[in-house]
Structures are given as C-alpha cells and as structure tokens.
Image (tube, rainbow, N blue to C red):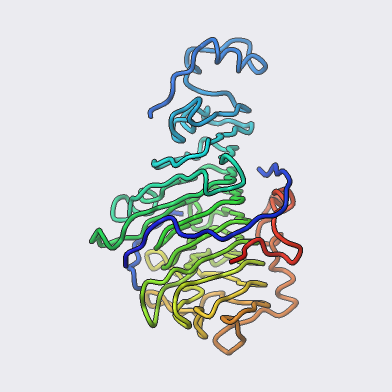
Length: 388
C-alpha cells in the first residue's frame, strides 16, 4: 500500500490553561498477523550561578537541572539538547523546540529523567520530529523515531512521525515506530503519533516491571498493532485513526497488548473517538501479543465510553500466533457509534467492574501517580477533544 505523510489530524482543542505534569520487543510480527553544541563558559557560569559556586570544565557541554534548553537556538538538534542534560538530574529540565521539522532519531536514556519536551505552540503540527527507519534495522528500539527510556518525561504540543514507505521498500519487517517508551510515569499531552504498523509502543524494561503512560488530547494513527506493548497505558480524550490497507476483509488491529498476567491494568482507551477510512467490518480492536511465545503475557485491553466507527468488526477481537483472544482480558463498556455492539463475542464490563477500571485505577500504581489531575484543560464538556 502506498501511504504518504502527514495524514490529516482532526483533533481540536478549545480550552486554555496551563499544565505542570510531570520491555522490549523480543520478536517480530508480520504484516498480517550532533553533535552537542558548545556552550561558552561565561554564559554557562551565568546560567549556573544560582545553583553552583563555579562551573567546572566537565560541565561546559551540559546544561544544569532546572534549565530551559532551546532548539535550535542553543542546540542544533533535539538529540544534542538531550545529550546536554546531566545524567541523574533530579530537577525538571525543559527542551523547548522552535516550530519546524526535525528529521532525526531521538534517544532519551534512563539516566536522564525529569524532562519536558515542548513544541512551539498548541498547534502540534508546527513542531514535528520525524524519521523513517523500519524494524528491519534494529528492531523496535532501532526503528523508533523517538525512544524514551527515562521515567518522569512529558511531551507536549509535538508530532512524532515514522514516514517509512512500506510500498517503496521490500523488507521482511516493515514495522516502523514513531514512538517507543520503556520508562515509568510518561505523559503525552496534545501530541500526535503518525505511522502505519506499530506506531506507538508503550513498554517496560521487563515483563514484571511496571511502567505507566498517560496519553491525553492526542492523535494516534496506524494500521497493524499501532498501539502495543506491556506498559499500563491510558489514552483519554483522543482521536484514533485506523488506516485502511486496501483490504475488503482485514485492514488491521488497533491494539496488541502484552500485559503481565499479574498486572490487572493494561490498555485503557476512554472518552475517545475512533475513526477510519477502511471499509465497514474490516478492523479489529485488538489481538493478544505474547512476545516470543511468553505465556505470562496476558493482554488486558478495555475500550470504554468511546465512539467506534463502522470499520470495526462485529467480532472485534482476534487470535494471534496461536493464542486465543478468549484467553486474554479484552472488554468494552458503554461504547457507542456504528461500530459498537453487545454480542457474545464482545465481552462487556459490569457497572461494578467498570467502577474499578477508571483512569485513576490504571495510573495510580504504588505511588499514587495522578497526572490526569494536572494536565492542561482541553476538550469539551461532554468529554471529547477529538472531532472529525
């Protein structure tokens, strides 16, 4: 299929406000199933004066915790700004991107938490990070346009794209990630993720390690397994576009969760809207991913209070690699639209079950994390920021 980028992002935002929010892919899945910019010592000393008595030579290429790093004014690339953040920083660091398109891969290592990546304005289409590497070269981590291994990272007002052209390149593993996360307490606010297969991977460092990701007022598009991984992930008040692959029968899968069996919370898609250019009855809500045949990865996915298009199949869950969807933890609750329905092949939560499957339940974890209480106010009174 020939596919060009960017695709139309129709999410709208009408409110104003401010916000202060703060595993690995072990197997492949088929389509079917800068340098650091030099900083003058004098300028650096002035920047650090409130924090340290005197700058050291070793700090000449690193900005202090609490600083705002401007790209490209201070640093020519996003990666060079990340590289300038001191390892082990304990205070927030903002990397502020001017409007423009940054064609590069960005890697935020686990040693650099407490980062805010910020676009130029609330028009997220003005600030884009894009690259075009498929899974064929380096797996999911090597493919991802942006990889966030650190915890306590927020991205706001940005668009992330992997524009690998599947039709023009005959490769065995064309999965091409726009974003991969393995850190904990990750927030995406007013962001867009654009790609085809495997657009957004939210993962954790190991099967039994908890990582949490909160996506709000955002846009996600793709075709095959384009929201996947084992992290506990909430997508709220967002627009999800299921792209057609030109099939009359099967155009893809929205999710492919690999939740650890002892983790009750995998993916929650809530108060959102799914749209599609695929024919009616040709798209699945998801399938259970068991990386490397791992039996303890038991997918948990809930779509609730979300509008579903006619493209969604009447039997919306699919088997994967010999694992039955019926052994996974798939459910719906109060969905609506032409693609919604209640049948024996569409498990529904009871009201009592739904009461313990709210946003707060998914995100709280052992530390009471609640980013939903501090992100900027977007959306409309009835709970949807995404309109087509």
